Length: 359
Image (spheres, one colour):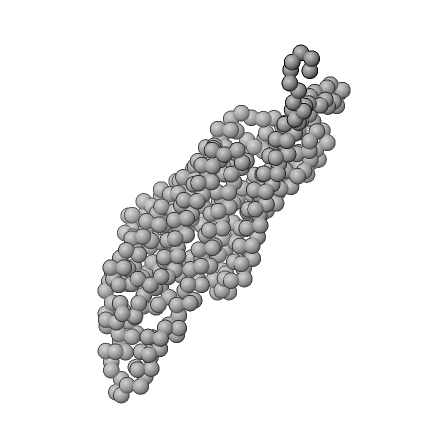
C-alpha cells in the first residue's frame, strides 16, 4: 500500500497445503472460473437430459402400437435412452469427487473412488453408442428416401454414406480409447485436443451429408408433386422442414464450440439429432392422421354421390378407386383421372415407403 501498488481485493489469493505439506496458492478468480465452468456445463447437460426425457415419454405415448416395432422407432428410442444415460453420467461426473475444489486445484485424486472412474469412462462409452445409433438411423432413412432412384445411384449414395459414418465412428472410437486411458492414468494427453476437434468435425460432416441427401431428395419429390398439382401440406413437407433444421442447427452448435466460452457446446450436436428425428416422425404421423379421407368434405360427397347414383357409373368408380390416399398430401383433383401417371405413382412411392418405416 505504501509503495503505491493498488490493492485489488477481488484478486486475492489464499494458501492451501498438499498432502505432504507443500503449500500452493489459489486466487479467487481461479475459484470463480472453476465454479462458473461447473455450473455452465451442468446446466448444459441437464437441459439436454430434460429434453431427451420429455421426448422419449412423448414418443412412447404418441406412437401407434403397430409402429413400435419399426426399425426407425427402435433406433429413435434407443438414441434417446442412450442420450439420457450419457447426460446423467456427465452430471454425476461434474458433481462428483473428480470435481471437488481441493481435488481439482491440488491435483490430488487419492480419495476419488473407483465408481467415479467408472462413471467417467461409461459416459464416454454411451456417447460412442449414441453416435452409432444415430448413424444407423440416418443411413436407414437415406436408404428409404432414395428408394425411387436408379440402382447405381442408390449404391453410390449408400457407399458414400457408409464411409462417412464409419469415419465419424472411427474418430469417436479413438477418442473413447485415449480418453479412457487418460482417465485411468490420471494424465492429460495433449493429442486429445486435436482428436476431440477432429471427432466433432467428422461427426458434424456426417450429419450434414445425411441431411443434405435427405433434404435434396425430398425437395425434388416436392417439386414434382407441385407440378402434378399436389400442393397440400403433409408428411413430406414436415420431413423436409425438420431435415433442414437438422442440417443447420447442429452445425451452429458445432461452430459455437470454437467461438464461445460456454463449455461443451459440441455435446448438443448429437442431442439435437436424437431429438429432431423422432420429433419429425411424430409430427408427420399427426399430419397423416389428420388427413384421413373421412375428414374431407369432398371425399364424403363423392362417396355419397357414388353410392346413390343409379346403375353405378363404372368410370366414376374406377376414378375413385385409383385416387391416391390423402394421407400423403394428394389432392382429390389431381387423382380424378381413371389412370394415374407413372411419375405420379413413382413420387407417391416415396411417401408410402416413409410411412411404412414410421418416418
